Length: 181
Ligand SMILES: Cc1cc2nc3c(=O)[nH]c(=O)nc-3n(C[C@H](O)[C@H](O)[C@H](O)COP(=O)(O)O)c2cc1C
Image 1 (tube, rainbow, N blue to C red):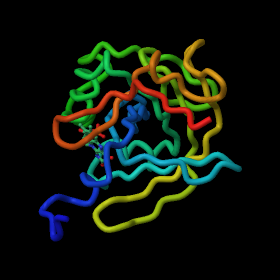
Image 2 (cartoon, protein in one colour):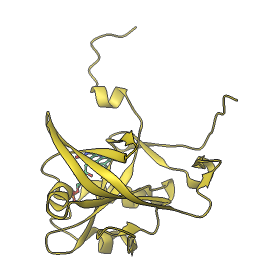
Image 3 (cartoon, rainbow, N blue to C red):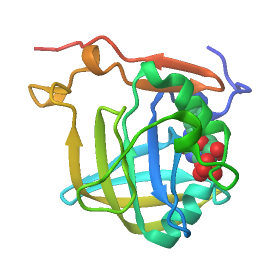
């Protein structure tokens, strides 16, 4: 067994499901960025936590407008996912640069992303500073997904092919389902 490994804990505990988070900036322009440190934290009410470095423009946008949308991307838009994780909305319009299509949301101002299979519209509920990141907790106020994305109450990964982040430029594509029944 290896001990004292020179690899960050977040890389050892991976891969982690990737989300594209859409927001509205203080001037009203939509922004989108890539995040992998995302997890559900409550089922009633439904709440999700996202860990953001405070310098992300996404954080500034959420602090200002208090709303965001978590969109679930698939492997077919991996280039757009990478681009949105490598450029800041402070400098460019990532919707224009990537060609991702903004769709009006049901309950919040930031847009959903048409090319994504699932959309979770969130209102900011709380923030906590932890180490070098800020945990942003959102209450899910509306949910939508592609017609065939959910089968028997779970995501059909063979259809959706969601992306997980292993670290650096490496991703994993979820395709197999194991049913213990
Ligand atoms: C696959 C991937 C996952 C990422 N996950 C996170 C994350 O969980 N938290 C974070 O603060 N930044 C994360 N980033 C970095 C941001 O996406 C990146 O800094 C981006 O440019 C921020 O854009 P913004 O300034 O428009 O918010 C990730 C980047 C990639 C490529």
